Figure 1: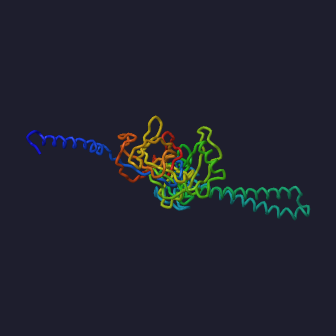
Figure 2: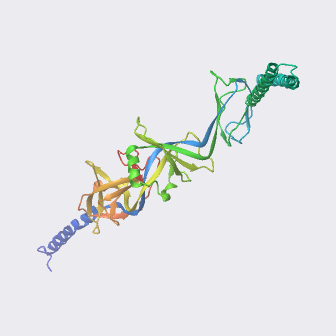
Figure 3: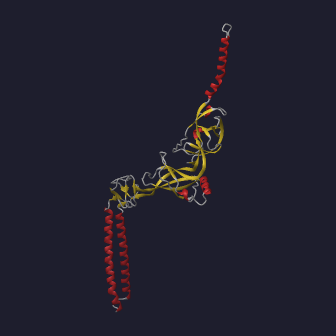
Length: 394
């Protein structure tokens, strides 16, 4: 081993060269990007259609004044539950009492005339048999008796009508239900224009009715799928999505479809009923009615944020068994919350890049980090882009 003519420097050069040869491998390993991936979800998925509807009580009864007069009393607390027959309003009854008294006086006079007419007939009949009076006089007495009897019946009817009208001065609840805010106050003259005719409304909300419309095209699709009507298993499988995005706890059932399509809008009105034991729902609320149209067996789902759109096509980046990246073009179905149904382009078990797919190229290597796909739902989730209220999955 020589040190004088440069043997040691040669060894150093060789060592540096060897170190330099190993550097590209280290750089390649560092270039592999760690990306979050999710496994394609496979499950049976209902296909639904969401429609905006308005809620009504099973009975919404308007309270009206049937006689004109000054409002004398209000006998309920607004916004509370009232029983059938409960006194709600009273109208000044003095005018109607006078009419009853007058009708009773007319009845008494008619009865008096009838008694006199009956007495005349009884007196004239034996006299006519003895030819003491003419047959004409007897016939006139019998006619007067009949007229008097008719006057009595008319007076009795007038008295009954006056009594009924007097009863209208006490306005009572026609049903058990929730009463609203009064539209008239004590002292108002009610019962005829220009004063308000509707004093209040009582609603039976133990059951609520959701009324909504579907397009003529959706109606035809439903009829083709269910020519004999809604299947029994789906008849009580209608959901209600409330304004805060929550799903109502009780499922509803379809009541009926209107007899005709509205020619001005091209839609058909439907009605579904929902039980409301907690009385959470009120008349006038708006909600989205979700109808189950079909159930897709073994449907494939991916998070919507994993899907990239380019030139009208949806694509995802898939990580293969060798950690290589592959781009696939998909045919998409309806959306469900934060997920998206895939009709074609993926298979069960595929690993899809959730975020950062734009940072990798097809064929490049990545370090996959599997995360769990979470499903989020909201009031506006479910419709595919550009479809508005198109059928969705849930």
